[in-house]
Length: 481
Length: 142
Image 1 (cartoon, chains in turn purple, orange):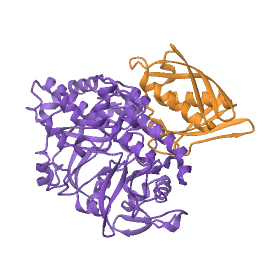
Image 2: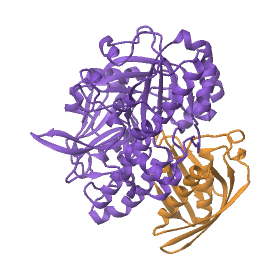
Image 3: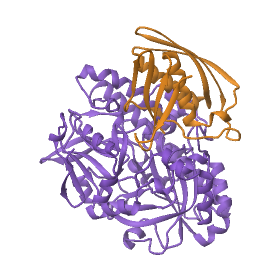
Image 4: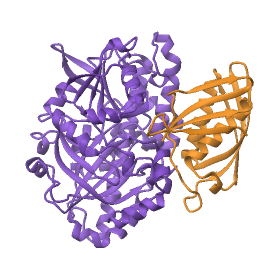
C-alpha cells in the first residue's frame, strides 16, 4: 500500500490503493512514528475511507495503532444527512476519557504520605474485573444519570457546580435517549459508577517537574502554577453500561446493513445511516452511555476529594482540588464545520482520539476561551502524561481532533513476557512511584516499553499545530485495574 | 477439551484468540474457557456456582458471539466468572444453545484478576469447520 508524504508529518494513502475508498486516508506522524505503526493501522484507516458519507479524509493520529473497526487514533466525519454512524468508530468503551484535577499541594507535602494516599485511593475507587461502586441507584435514577450527565452529580452532592464548565460538553451531551437503552445494559452497569475498570485505565498522582512547564501563560490559565505542584489524573469510561450498549447495537447493525445496501470491509465497521431509525436509536443510547461516563468520572472526582481531604486534614476546596478539564476519547458527536464553502453538520467519530477545539470555541469556559480547549494526553504509567491545548489549525485540519495517548507498540502478551508485574512494581517503587494494582499481570501489560515515546507523539502534534504543548506531568503514584 | 492460542500480532491493545474444538459443542466450551482465562487465573476461581444458559440466534457465528457476550454480561451483572462449561448446540437456523456453566463469584482476595473483558468484537470474527473440527477467531476488547 502506497503511503505518500504530503507535508511535514502528514502522509496520505490515495483512494486508488483500495477498492471502495471514497476519500484518501491521512496519517499524522513523523517518519519514525509511521515506521512504528503496525500494518493494521493502514488496513483500518483505509477501510474507514470506504464508509458512506465520509467527508474529506479518513484520519489517523500519531498515536495510532491496530484496533478493531477504526484504528485506535482514528477520526472520521460523516455527513449527518447522508452518512453513517458506526459503533466500530466509537468503541465499546463509550466516552472513555481523561480527567485532570489540580491541587495546591506540593510533592514535598505529599511524598511523606504517598503510600497512605495511594492505599486510600485504591480502597475508595474500585478497580479490576467486574468492580462495583458505592452509588446504588434505581432504574429511574439511572435514567436521570443518562440524560443529565454530570449535572446529576452536582444535584446529588458528587460535584461542584464549576466542575461542569470544565468538562467537555459540560458533562452532558445532547440527544441521550434511555428509551433506546436495553434492560441488559442498565442491569450490567447500574452499580458500576465510580469504578475504574482495568486494561489501560488508571488513576495517578502526578507532579510537574522542573522544566515541565512549556507554555507559562497557558499553564497559568489552566491552574498549573509551578514545578512541584501535585495533580490527579485518571482514565476510565462508561464501564459495563457502555460496553453493553455497543454490543447490543453492533449486533443490530450487523443485521440491518444489508437492508440499507451497505457493505463494509471489516464486520466491526457495521453501521447504519445516521438518520435511519437504527442510527438514531444507537445515537440516543450511545449518548446516554457517554453521559454515564461523565458521571463515572465525576463520582471518582468526589471520591478523590474525600480521600485527599481526609489524608491531608483539609477541606478539598482548601486543597484547590478543582477540575482542570475532562475530555472524551470514544464518541460520535454532531459538530458543524465549513466544507467547500458550506456549513455542514457532521457526525464526527473519534476513536482513541481527543477533541481539541481551538481558542474561541463557545463550549469552553471563559478562563480557557483565549487559550483553547485543554487536551489531556495519557502516556504510560512509567513515562508520564502531557497537557496541551487545542488550536485553530485542528479545527481546519482534523475536525478539531488530536491524539489521545502514546499508543501501543507491543502486544500485551509480549509485554508480560518481557517483565513480570511484581518485578515492575518493585522497580517503579525504587524510582519513587508507588503502584497499587488489582491485577499484577495488568501492570506488566502497561509497562512503559509497550508504548511509543509520548514526547515524540506530542512533538508531532505541536509541529503540526493541531495541539500546543503546555506542560508535562510525571507520575509518583498510580492505581490501576 | 479443545485448544486455544492467544495471538500477539492482532489488535495490539486487545486480546485476539484462535480457538479449536473437536466438535461444535467443544468449540463453544473451549471459547468460554479462553474468555475466562483472559479475565482471571482460572485456577483461582472457586467452583461454587452453577448456572444454566439458553440462547437462540439466527446464524451459528452470531450464536457464538451471543454466547461469549452473555458470559461477559454476567461477569459485570453478577460478578460471576465461569471457567468450565458443558455446551450443546443444535438446530439448523435458528440455532440453539443450552449450557451448564461452572465457576464462582469474583473475590479479589482469592481470585487473581487479569483483564476486564468489555466485549466480543466483530473484527476478524470467524467460525469455520474443516473435516469435523471447528475453529474460531475471536478478538476481545479489554
